[in-house]
Image 1 (spheres, rainbow, N blue to C red):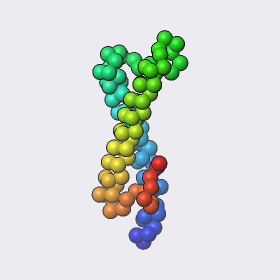
Image 2 (cartoon, rainbow, N blue to C red):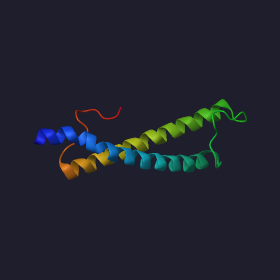
Image 3 (cartoon, helix red, strand yellow):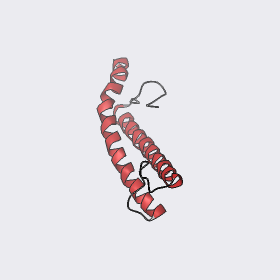
Length: 100
């Protein structure tokens, strides 16, 4: 019976993981906006297709945004997995790997 529970848990975790991912993306977007405001004292980060922005500014914004999104995604995924493990006694993803 325990083996069946372990096999079905990753499927049951998918909607939870989706919801956590959505919340994490929202939080990461807000964190990036605040960070960009501190770094460049601007409300809006540059868009890659903005002809008035230079390469350095666009790549800086992309690097900061990528780092924030990766950190928030990892924190949210790990928190969700630990919560599932505490409540069920089973790690939500089979094997050692996760999404990446």
